[in-house]
Length: 219
Image (cartoon, rainbow, N blue to C red; front, top):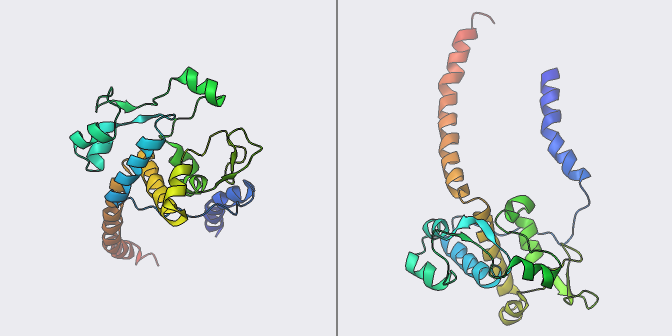
């Protein structure tokens, strides 16, 4: 009984820690991501390369790895999703020099490779969809998820041209790609995990009866 209580307490610790971590943000919503949707991932990468890589880097992701995983032909990748000076085997780096970025923004824009893994998909999606006008801020905008953020709303033109619903779909694609980028092996890991669970479920049957056979004389 004592062992059961100890295990139960250990299982509840993450819940208690999360509750102690701070209040719930009413603007934080679930991210509609689907790692099996290659088209969504491709659209998300296009948005990322067109709007994010200009200031942010993704130094732990290589163009070639993304092209292979997302089934993007190398010639299309080179023509549409890379800087002309880059090679497909290189990592994704920012187009703006770091010293110039620091001069413009007051700090070097963070690398985005792992942000979805650190912050979570819900945070990324909610952040992207929660900019609002705030004339008191240097760039004229603020964010409900990241108050007083120093980043301008670089996707404002897209938001205006697409409308709210389509923009949210586009941000879901971008979030989907950023989740993939943070852990490229995730889809494969989850696929293998299904087979592991099936194997364990089948293995449980002979183990159960073997255990009964071993202990029947004891009981």
